[in-house]
Image 1 (cartoon, rainbow, N blue to C red):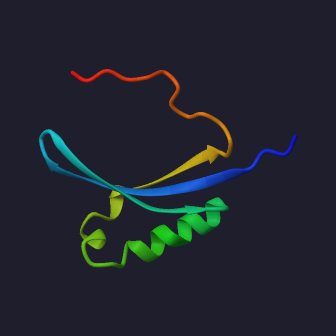
Image 2: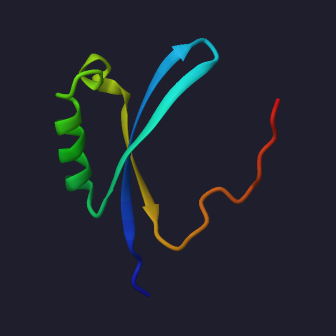
Image 3: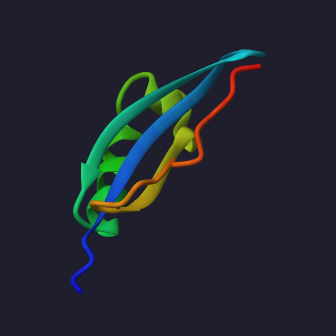
Amino acid sequence: MDITCVFVVQHSRQISNDREDVKLMGVYGSQEKAQKAVDRFRLVEGFRDNPNGFSIDRYIVDQDHWAAGFATV
């Protein structure tokens, strides 16, 4: 079985105590490409003020990733 993965780059920052701003920056075919994107974004106005707000997450394609549901409190 051939498993395909992608790497999702996001940036998040706290706006207030109860609000967070999350941006999907891109989806890449390798960890290396995702890291190079983060390196580029860290130089862009706004993002350079919060350079540690980036995350890279690995996802397997064609697989559910949040199947448990949710509750609002």
